[in-house]
Length: 597
Image 1: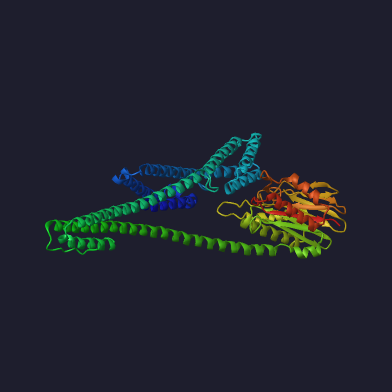
Image 2: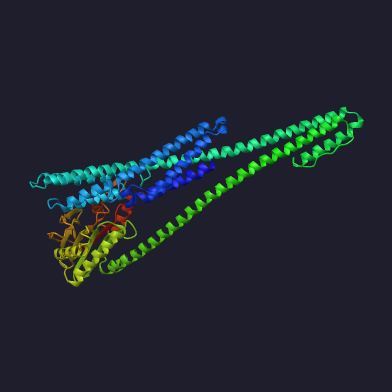
């Protein structure tokens, strides 16, 4: 049973390695073969052979372990069947260009090539698709269907030769996406549900049952040894009592040999039945000689049996110790691997934290801004260590420029986009001398396309950014605004005025020029101007784990608008944390506000 336990631990490790390594291994999806699976098959054969050997053993059949072994055998078979289902689902789900994900991506790429399909709709569709694959949040499933159906509805209104091709690609995309969702939810690899949870629970139960049987075997062996020893001791004591009784019944002339024999028996008992010396008695009758001879034979047999059982116990103890050493070796190896992974994680985290310092150094300093523009605030809260949201603010003569932007993604990829966006904004403003919102966003669009659309192996990068740009003349209180998918809110006497954004993204489409329109508003003293990214509104929380949403955000801005800028920032942060509670942060959060004096 100890050998079965060691092999099962090895089997569990092989299965976990397969799930962690082969599910993202392109060679596995190409050939369907895996060295880990081959090792697993060999290990399975050994385990089944050992279980059958123990089950068919004569002693096992006579014991009460038959039902337990049958249960272990059935449990192991169920464990292997569940793992085989995981293997088949992983192979069917695929990865990148293989399986269901590959077919889904292929139809998405084909849709991107149709000029009749709106690129922004495709971008939104792919964004929800990636969010679901990364986070496995089922709320994105309906969003993917909404954007895909939008493509289908739009295609039906076209009278082109490619309409049927577009409808076919979009329909196939939905079918493959739904199949991928089914596989992900059934597998449950990321959130420890579904088949993955069943396999883990079965492995824990299997390990527990085997451990209990090993302990039962050890206890049974110990009890058997103690029982045999007790019986032999009982025989000897019976013989001693009989000898004493006989000694009192024998005549004086034969009492001495019986006393000698009794003393010899006592020595044998005191020596814990290990005394090898034989008693030599002479000049006695035949009955005493026979009694002494019989005891000598019994003494030899007792020593032989005790040595035999001691040898068996020593052999079993040695075998158990060897198996425990193997288990300890496996544990040490796992600990070493864990330490290596943790060190890698620390190195990566240190690098990202250093990147955070670089990103913070590039952004305008908030302390200096409080001196130049005391009536403004910036709430910048990254989802990860570094952020995909960034801001720009500067006072050039009498004109205050402030920008809030949201680059594609978050974390390290988003940080690269934020650095690229901030550098190009400063290049346009400081290098080209442009401050007009339309001119700045148009120039920024061209620079991002130039930076991101360089051809690499026949593919283009599809990154872009949403942005809100404001220019306020401090003396005349005239506001000029232009936005790309990001609006501007003005709160005036508890009434919110929304300056809508242009429905374009910056740097998204190198094939056509974008049209950006600006809006001009005369501000009044006490007006509060806000620009922001979508992170605050999209945060999940509250009692029902729903998004904060735009309406609640508008009510919040109206409620805090009569406070000074610094207190507004504090209230925004407190409300955000109270809403989020224990939920993870959904996205990077950026809110900028300016109070007109």
